[in-house]
Amino acid sequence: MTATTGPQLGQIHALLAERGYEVSETAPETLSIRETESGVSLRAVLQGDILFFSLVCIVVPRAAVTADVMARMLAADNGISTSYFQLYEAGAGKVAVTLNNFCKLQDLGADDEDDILACVHLSARRVVGDLKS
Image (tube, rainbow, N blue to C red; front, top):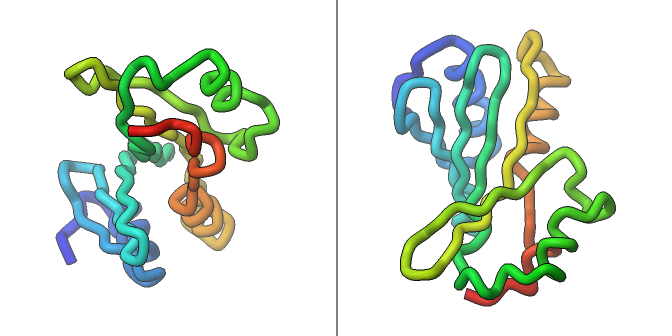
């Protein structure tokens, strides 16, 4: 296990590792988290008492991100109301679609643990399934 910067990050690291995730510290206050069965990876960054999560869902040709796909991604009933998408240039005419979320930490008790685990279990398959790489 990689050493962590602060006690909160250490507790988060331990929680996720106990749940079977591969966790490593890639920079101060930053964790790389990998779900071992699917291989899905995401990044978590701790800033004060806010833990931000970002998951690259897919990299696709820019033309694949149509108005219809964007409408589905942004719809209030998309099933991920606490999350948001962002698009980043990926080069060669492609964009990376990321799913982002955050949770506000309080005392790292049971409620915070539930919030952290819920954020890590994010899945965008239903929403971005129409995108073809």
